[in-house]
Image (cartoon, rainbow, N blue to C red):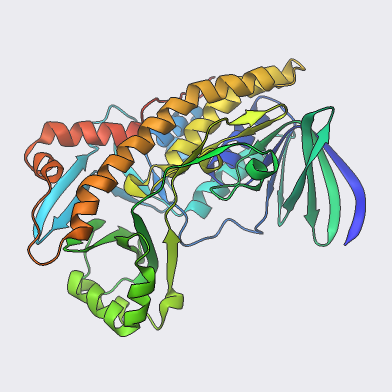
Length: 405
């Protein structure tokens, strides 16, 4: 690999082109802040990235004047979360009553969402996106982070920046290089994700199918379904040991209307294992560096709030970092304000997810034979008021961030 031949300069370097990184990059460039986003992949395409766009995220699109254009992209809507609980249709969360420009969950492939943000960001001369570019280490100067070393196509170079933002996901390298202390929370579940072809007679909406010892999440993606087989933590090996034929039989028993699609699963290579980890940083940053999104707080897949939390972090970070960087400040005090504002919402969300995982979900996964309906599910089934409160909490989050004019 060739030695560094090029040095790039920016006020902010963002590592990671996911929802947090792309939204922050766009919002900073919109303010005129010189911003570089680096993304290790050449494209945003990934079948199993989170694709739930919550009302809070669409509120941000509305604030920016983009909502109508955004919703012209192909997507599917759901106005409530529903479970087939032992053969009984059970509504869990109702989004239709949310006071929002878009009172529903939109299922939109994440590559489309990120491509939309990238196109908007490229309209600003202060924005630059480097795909196929991998951060290799942090630059340090005078006891503070001063950017990153990066590589692309066997060329090494440096990106010097006053603030470096780690938006590089739950396995964040920026977090590790900065030595930021991480608290592991843990999760009692793992998930096999699969892409299943749509067939005649298939269901017409997203659904959670609950049976003793297992849960199947079926997400309508238009011309196919994204399915998540939820199981107890550490049981993936036992599922694989039974063989792909037994796995297909389990899936067909749970969702017989999708049997033709399940028949196309040839091996466990067609089922991507997500070993669910939940953690959060004790401190989100230090001199010259800040982590947001999954890099700061890895969420459970329960209710699909990871994208929304990442976007909310980015909106708060842009509101604090943008003015500070334009004033010529280091941004360290702005970093601290972002952490203070966003830390509590992430902790409370993880606590609520954990309560649901260790309560109703754990009860289902422990069940053998006849399954007793957990109390929380019974309450939601019989109370529309509770379902609407659940919808507001999931859809809008603990603290809604608004994009400033």
